[in-house]
Image (cartoon, rainbow over all chains, first blue to last red; front, top):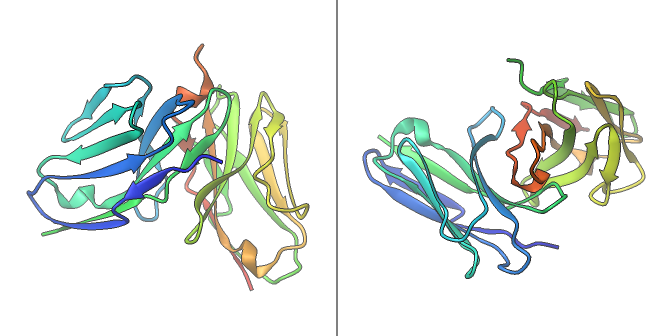
Length: 111
Length: 118
């Protein structure tokens, strides 16, 4: 059973501040790392899929990095806005499997 | 383009009743996944299909749960008989390999079915 840990569980950030949170996973047998954004009453939406050690991906003010050797990924949000409030999920993808999700980081942007 | 469509959005029923959840994947996607979201366990994979064939059902909690995919555009998840501990949000997702492994392809989720068993 893969163990995907996310921290912190929840986070309150002032509008305009930058923030980041972590996803940790077993570094052996790594295949792919996914990040999803999940807004309340909506469906999870894919942000990034990363496969290579040292990968960095960016979408607007959101970016992510991957370290497969030490088993972690960071998600960064620059200049947080109220619309960034959501739960951010990371998940491990296997070669032929469905995804194993962490429990998410619940982000609240305070005006 | 239509995304993954799930029905119903909400279901409230009494313990012991049969519950059927439905999913229509994105056209052209050859992988379909069923997940369950609970506060305690987060988002868990129940079962997934490739080309309508169940590949891994090890996440299905009990024999009371069954899933079918009779064709490429429709899948059902059935619970019979239902119990209060089955109350959760059930998500369906679809994806396609596009020549790569499915593990590194993003999944597209439906809006979920919020199930309450009284």
